Length: 309
Image (cartoon, rainbow, N blue to C red):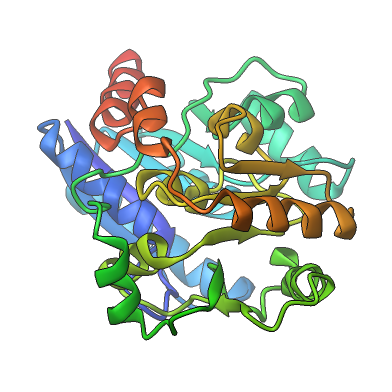
């Protein structure tokens, strides 16, 4: 079976998002013939150009399935494959808490255009009001291998006596709400607690930061199934997160993990205080294994969906 993976190709580090490349590799290990198609550029002109390029690729490669990540890439895939007989699978990575134009057109495409649609959390399926397969992204436990905490702290340049709260995204991304993270840490009133944004780093560097950190903080206003939470769990890193996507289900009330309603800054502060006082490592890696959220297990589920088409 030949599959074309369509995803945004605008990452500063690597061509596509790490979770896309990880899933791509895991499906290759399942024996699928994979082709990567990155959508480069921003705005409608870039997407129109991508449609033309993807249509040429589909005609040349004759894939059985085009699997697009994110809804706009799903739109590109649907138009590019029109009348070719190629099946279109779309992974919806975000969520739809409110009635918007995007929610309406995505719902229409799910019902009438795309051949299969995967969501990353049950919350997203509920928001769309549909019975959709829930397939969170998996974690490659070989890539996210444990590094000794003190060794990792040295490599990351963390100072002795300081507590480091890492925040893994670009602070310029408004939906990730970096100012909320700054406010919560500031309310601790402890100069020995350092908020450290981690972005534009290699995969190996991210692993070291997660193994070195005292806490991972996520302050997003909305998510599907945030990969950073599962990656932090694979590194047994304590977690404080807003209640978005499937975070509450994935962490499962595990010791050293705290989930707070979005907008509750004092709640985030208190959760950070508790996570720092926890002072150890979690059982996150075992939890990932028990939930079957490794890349190989997830790849097998996705392959089954391809097979049904």
